[in-house]
Amino acid sequence: MDKIAEIKKKLQEVVGANPNYPIVGEVTKVAGESCSIKLISGLELSDVKLSATVSESANYLLVEPLVGSNVLVLSGDGTLSNLYVVKVDQVAKVKLSQNGLKVEFDSTDNKVRIENDNVSLKDLFTDLANILNNLKVGVLSPNAPSSTITPDVVALVEQFSANVNNLLK
Image (tube, rainbow, N blue to C red):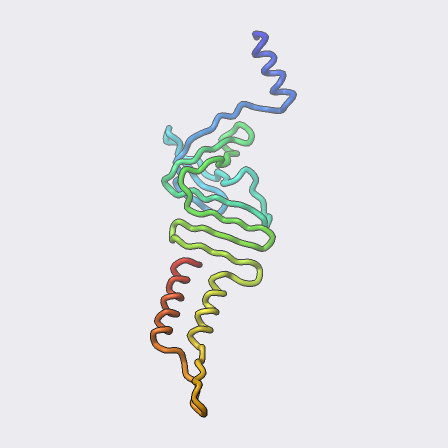
């Protein structure tokens, strides 16, 4: 063994480093916190982790690749049975959960979910639309009854509700 190779080997032993080259694969399936990929050779691998550490923690960031897109994976121990995704070419979903706050961007249905342990943003906007729909308008004439909002305002509130439902989950 030449001197440079010997030094490299000793450094790897001291640092605990093992050369690990990235593998390119096409996503064939996504399930929970893992996916299946097909390598260029045609070999299909399942249970590829979407993050280097998969835990049952309530705090996480998860990037789900789009089925059919390419990912770059590395092995945690040099084998094909401990692969995890390090780069995603196309994203289907991004999920963030931190201290009760949950945010999800979903490109498959073009919607966003924002919520915490108590309420969701969609629920807040739905409540606002309900309040506006049931709003009573006072009439300034003496002894005149109050009335509901006018049809043009009802149409605006209904459009607001439709926009909320198109954006939020």
